[in-house]
Image (cartoon, rainbow, N blue to C red; front, side):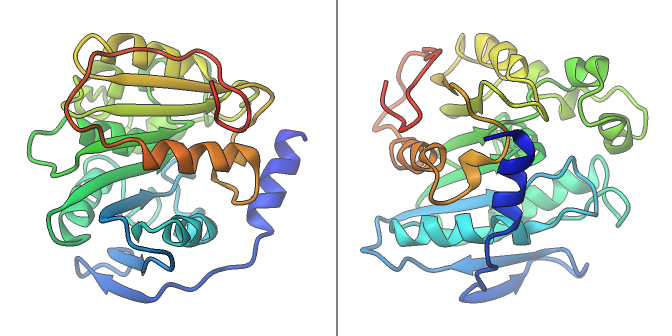
Amino acid sequence: MTAADEESELFGLPYVPPDATTAYGPHPDQIIDHYLPTALPNGVLVTLLHGGFWRLAYDRRHLAPLASALAAHGFDTALAEYRRVGGGGGWPATFEDVLSAVAASGPARRHVLVGHSAGGQLALCAAARPDVAVDAVVAVAPVADLARARATGTGGDAVDALLGGRETVEADPAQLLPRVPVTVLHGAADTDVPVELSHRYTAAARLLVRADLHVLPGTGHYAPVTPGTPACAALLNLVASSVPPEPGPGRVVLEVDADGSP
């Protein structure tokens, strides 16, 4: 399956409406869609952040099927929207929305922050904040190294558009130190966000916390967040196992099978 096939498969899935929607601010994009567990609740809250290179053209709706799949596995799932470039977003407004959404997602309990692509960058930045009440972060194909992404033209001018052309250390996960366990899932055949960004990030992050990198051979950018694919099954398994009983030593897993097994 090509990268274009993966994209069309994800965006071709029918929209799954949420069980409820709440606002965490006055802007129309400061909202959270809630997907309640349809299986036995497992007591874990997942806040889900979509990608789209932080641009207004992409919103949370394309991850509604994934939010529903997480709910079907017992997760109380909060699919968060945030202001994006072209609609009042940019740094730091976009990240401030993420912090507010995480705080508003629900009562304190086991909490996993999951982000895809640009949402993965936002999730990894949140992982470095001591005031963010999450127990673990799962980043899928994240833009985990903004300096390298800018240098290689990842997303065109997306990084400059997010930062307004400034150099902002606080926005670059590769220059931050995570404070909670981090799991990164990335397709080896990803042509939208090169897997090298995840290699660079986890190589540094694992010196401080548990930071696992799972690379899926033959997988592109969208399959891991497309329910029904083996890559998404791997993601669901990683989310389920992402909250350790206690912090453990860092390690990097360089390759796993498409079904998520080592």
